[in-house]
Amino acid sequence: IVFSRFQLFSSQRHVSTQPIETTINHKRKNRMQTMFLMYHYFHGIELYNPIRVMIAAYVWMTGFGNFLWFYSHGSSNDNGNNSYSTVRVLQMLWRLNFSSVCLCLALNVPYLLYYICALHSYFFLLVYGTMRIGHLYNWNHDAKAVRIKLCVFAVFIYVVWDLDNGFLFTTFHGMFLSNQPTVGASSGSLWEWYFRSTLDHWATLWGMVFALHYPVTCLWLQKVEQRLDWRRCVAIKAVVGGVLLMATAWWIRGPFQQERFEYNQTHAYFSIIPLMTYIYFRNLTPWLRSHSLGLLQHLGQTTLETYLLQHHIWMTTNSRTLLTLIPGYPQMNFLMVTAVYVVLSRCLFRVTLTLRSILLPSTSTVWQCFRNLGILTGSFIVCYSAVLFIKDVKVLNLTTLGFLSMAGGSLVHALSTHFAWQSSDDSPPSTKGHRVAAKYIPIPHLAGVLIV
Image (cartoon, rainbow, N blue to C red; front, side, top):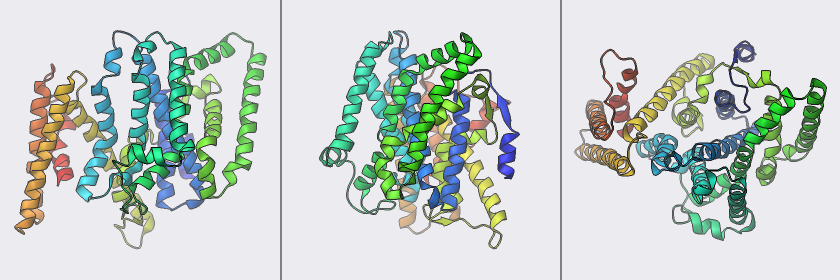
């Protein structure tokens, strides 16, 4: 109740009245992420179906956001090559996978334990491939050519996930995954990935289709709201809203009432109904499009980090048990663990973006990016070898661990900064009297901790 009241009194106004504005998207992700965390923390299995719809919304935004970027920023001859460049792909994959890969190496857990990272990376690459092939036809917004590519993409999805009996899926993914049981995948990583990817395999395409017609939708809203009198405006919006509400009512009384395992069979095909209904009514008027609730808005920027660290800080044993710092006082323990969890998530978010700007700057070439990544990988190997050596000679204690952490982190920071800024036209940030430079200070310590 208190949380809801704070949300209501934290309304903020925005200049833009465009549908699905970026700032509002971050705040929408913040509220969905809060629901995910509460679902896991309190084991709210009765909320499984609504949570699945929210996850579909995330995958939908992957298709919508990336398609819209490539379709708009990559639509001119001047900057099209940069928009489809390998550097941008590396930057995106770094953002999605750096933290998860570090956690896998540090904690010896499989990558699919953090299946959200794999899911977004996989569908991002599918969106990129769809837009990259024949991208010269995108520069003049040739909707016909783009629609043909979307149809081919739809056929690919249908054949791999709906028509095929598993042969094509195993052929495409079997070389990377196995049937051996592992942490978080008792039936093997291949089956786990098939299950996770099947649940929302159409959501990305729905997002791409919506993004293709997004400019037309914005123009339609402007025409209805500015050129028509208020009676016709209300009538048109009421008709569209009525159709969506009837479809949503059917979905609520039908697929939404199914049990968990039955619902999974239909979720990929009908989750678009509540999603489109929410988007329509959330953007129904200019006032709604220009206002949003501001509480915990920064959580929407760190949804990836909060998702990852919930497994190991907010909860333990890969989200199976709760972390207890104050035994006997669950409310106080919840507040303390949550405070530590949110702060560390924010720090990990800043470290990820800062390292990306150092190792994969937008002005660098593909060779420079791979060279910087090679230097980072070599530093990791050196530090990991040092840990194995110290462990073999049985002198691994807290003192040597702390020393190696600082030394390894400093090595990674020094090498990556030197080679990255050497290949850039900009000067490295100063550490004296400049507020921006403060975000570079914790990198040696945090990078060292991740390495060890």
